[in-house]
Structures are given as structure tokens and as C-alpha cells.
Length: 184
View 1: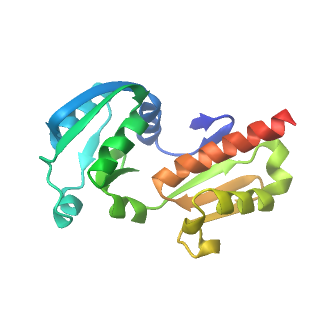
View 2 (view 1 turned 90 degrees about the vertical axis):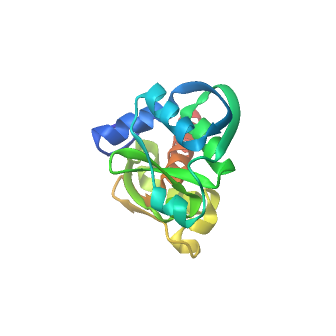
């Protein structure tokens, strides 16, 4: 179970290992490195399975030989991937126990359901937490605002159906909210 300041989401051991690796620091220098080689090096360096959604890339006209130019030191693998992939019109999802490189459009379509236990101080305020979440974290993606992601409370658990990247923002939001309540 990956825990972020007392907030946990349930998932397979392989998925938890990939999420943990995304927090690892990396230093990489790619100068005109083909995308496929950059991905292979990151997979090997961080010991996580990374696959490419070749069908989605081909349909979008993106080549595995697209040159990658990026030199970053001591950043999280998550940040490195976001920057590298965004430049190529790509993103990633964690799906079928692998980190899958795909187009940004395909990544946005993929929904992950995660459960976040509410910290004790917030259990009685679940509707307020959901309102704050859906109005401040990517507001246009939530069903209450016309999008296709959802957040609902079941007793002391927040159930969120959203993209992988949105879950990263949700976990960060909940962590900050918990800290704010603990400090008051």
C-alpha cells in the first residue's frame, strides 16, 4: 500500500513498486537520443517495466525514433518522464502492472479507481473536501463540472475515478489538506 502522509491507495504490488520508483531521483542526459532508447534506459536504470503503446503512437504519427533532448539532474523520475514525454506529445499510465507510454489523449481516457482513507479530522467534512477537491484540482475534469472523473465519499473513504496524473494531484491535495488541519 502506497502511503502519502497517512493517505493510502490500494493497488497491486507491481503497481505500488512502479509508483514508488516514480518518486526515485534520477539524473539523465539525452542528446538526440531516440525515444525508444531513452525509454529502455529509464526502464533498466529504475528497474521497472516500461512498454510503449505502439498502436496509439503510430495512429498519432509519433515515431519511436523521435529524438529526445533532455538533461536533468537529481529530479524525480515522475518529473523527468512528464517533461520528456510532454515534449513529444506523450504521457504515461500505470496499467496492467507496467508503466505504459502512450499519447496524451489516450492517457487522459484511462481511468483508475483509487480509495483514499479520510484522515480522522476530515471524516465529518467529506462533502466539503470533495467540493474543495473538485473546484481546485483540475476543475474541468470532474463530473460535477461537466467532466468524466468522479469523487465520492463512502463513510470515511474517498473514492476517486480519474486519470493516473489526476490521482497524483489528488494525493498531493489530500496530503496538504491533512497537514493544514493538523497545524490548526
